[in-house]
Length: 286
Image (cartoon, one colour):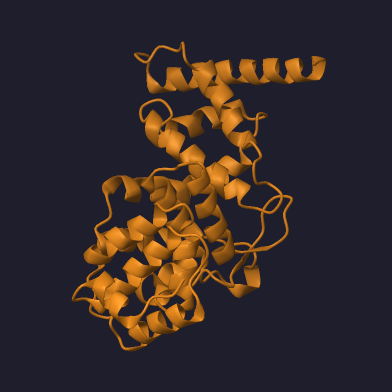
């Protein structure tokens, strides 16, 4: 779809920098993608420096519109193709070309994987905090030591201040910051959770807010599921770790909350171990 210079000015009203973001967000809501003429026009606006003075809090609503569109990957791709992504989200732009491995999967490009995971979130009707977490949670991996790639040691320590800076820059809602930091710290741990270790599972549920912040826990499970299903061959699959944690959470339903933390954790670990053994026995019999 093509837009002329006048329509670009109309989108941005008196701010051509915001016009670039607004058009990219609009394109994410439409079928197809921008043609060469439109991309050239956007590129010219970026090259002219119109994004330099654009205020991040004013950019935020356009980012939200694109992230909440049916195809958020189009937002990221359009911004990247016209040179705007590196101007407004350099932490995300730096992920393209960076490799990562996943259990049982080949290496993936982190930037491409990010776009696929965002589209998975759109298909699930995910709320904004989930989509923002998927956008931001891997920013600590962009400069991992090359000798360790495709493994990313200490990316959590690098990622935390970057996520906090992105949130401060755009004045993102607190729930976006909270879920993104939780996903940074816990998503890969959730991917590795095992029914063979009931005690750590009980402690994980406590950390993830499964008992006292159930909505945030459900949103984190959605983040992890979208990250999992974004890998090749997994689209449409059920995320097995969410099902495992649901079994564990249900097993803890009857445990009294007025016990001490130590007593609760011990009781939860025992209940989870029984549930896992029962579930495993049921599967073997079936």
